[in-house]
View 1 (tube, one colour):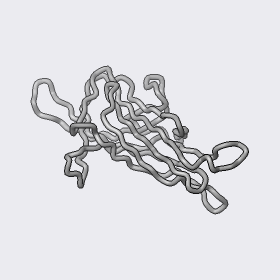
View 2: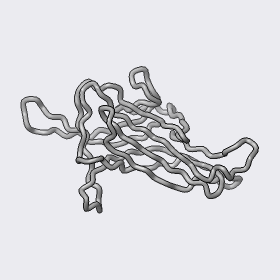
View 3: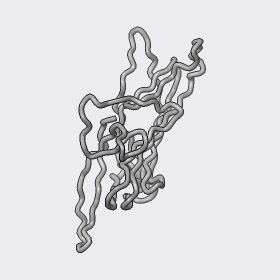
View 4: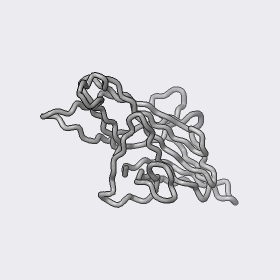
Length: 188
């Protein structure tokens, strides 16, 4: 849960019309007492070795900043090749999905600010099939979360930025073992 995502934040001075842009790297870390949710979004690099995993299969893992002390504007990047003028923010995770042959996973990422969804992205892939000669490791994945309207959004003072990750899998029913489904979808 320590992979960075890059967001550009604009801050406006009260006495000036000039915009000062700053590039922030945000990290997903284990929950702390002020964040709530399943994990914390922070600008500080988490301690090494502090990684943990959580199952996102048929559930939602939520990362949050906690309430901000001042407003923050997040500006998206232009989506290349898009004639519609779409903008996105990059969100990076380490993910692993494993299951029987022909099983598939759908990952869903939802970004919210002030309690409202500002962007989302879905990605489908084949699940890894573990075996004697094949181990299933965590893969680094980049999601381009498309913003729902404009090129930016503002997180208001006293509100929070939230990133939710969930996964659904198909083809798990055919695993056949006496212990039920052998599918897993995890985030690290």
